Image (cartoon, helix red, strand yellow):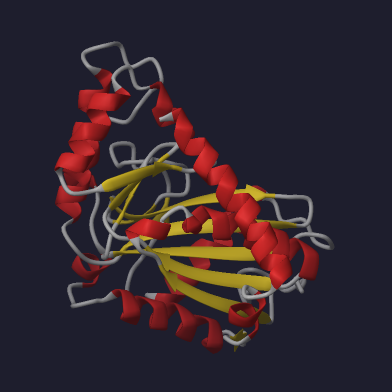
Length: 279
């Protein structure tokens, strides 16, 4: 349950249920199918959840990206570079996911304590800052990154993570994509070219970002030390334990196998499948 402790001192939950799902190309839509289903779970159970997930090379499109004048050519540029793509069920702009990107979704109950939007973002920033205390992490928009937003996480002006959130009456999910390792310059160039090709010389009426690949960096570069997805996850979990949060790694893996959860998940998955028809 959400507590009343100051966010400056403690996380507003004492226990968090864990789920870790590396996803394949065949079940990439499960990423947001699971997110929507778990958001229902946290609203019903009023328990905090933490979901780690990864994808093979994929461009995750936002709803705004559908308005590119030549979206078809832009998507062809993505597949030519060995990346797949799909359309998520929320607004915003595209982000890249691959073997070096860790996606972290933190679900928080809202029935008793309604967190303001910025406060929810601050919880995710706090979690990542405590996981990597060697870094001085700032949160403000990195204009020339891909998917720029007010709560971009950066070090010395170089973005390594972006945050978004979704809400229902009973809960919310704060989602971060964290560039841990890999070729971040390539990722930036991939998205830069996606928008340049997609605009096809037309006016940029939807304010798509002008991406500068050098505006973003990986955590391993910022830390100046080797880092893997596994060690990044361990650092996040260690930060929770160090701040008196109990980790429950057993409840969610069992719950997602129940008939009731599977029914909810299949419905959400079908909604994601239908959404792809817009491309």
